[in-house]
Image 1 (cartoon, rainbow, N blue to C red):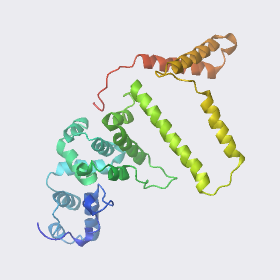
Image 2: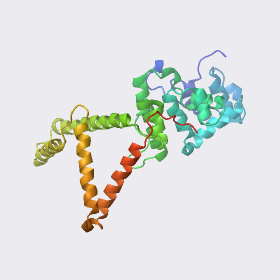
Image 3: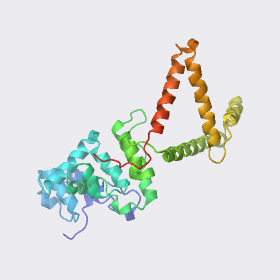
Image 4: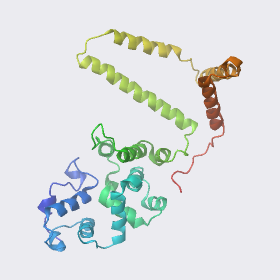
Length: 298
């Protein structure tokens, strides 16, 4: 159908070309605008006059009349949206960010392919912009819609999954979604390095803010500096293979284990728990499979 986009939805961006205010749920927002801005006495097809997008048209009919083409798919997608606590919608979004094909997403959620397609079109239309990493990051890491003192656990979980998918792909999402997908030794080393990098950057931002904020020096600054030097001095010297570090850790564990055996430490709960935890982690690490596990398969 030809014609201009109805005035009621003219402020909703339908593509990234219109600006970074484009949001992946623009079709859902458009239908909500129709439902608010149009008179209910107006015939549905008359209200859609000038609307060219097929998904918008059918979703409006579904919301207005309860009937549309591919009604079961729209019902499924809408059900995911209004029942966000189930996590199905959030998982579809995260898998989409991880570039998992639609057929595989449908298989993982045990649902027909068309259900996934309809959900993506209505609530997370990013497929055409997956290579626009800067914009995609602005969507995934956008400020929370809830006040600071009211953290929505469902929103937090969705952000956590999407961030894992954005940073580490499908396997990273699998590790965030399913605790049984353990990290390999190589992945642990990489993530440890990332943690150090992030914390170093945040520490730098903190001390930089002290200066740029015109905060006068104080004794705490000296304490922070000496604490940092003390921590660095306590780190064991590593050779190229990290052998000295592991030897130092083994020696430390051995000393703790011997101390735990002494009669006077039999009631030292903290020491006993520490040794037990270290022993458990060493056993888990020794028995961990070397191969890459298939993720999100159930």
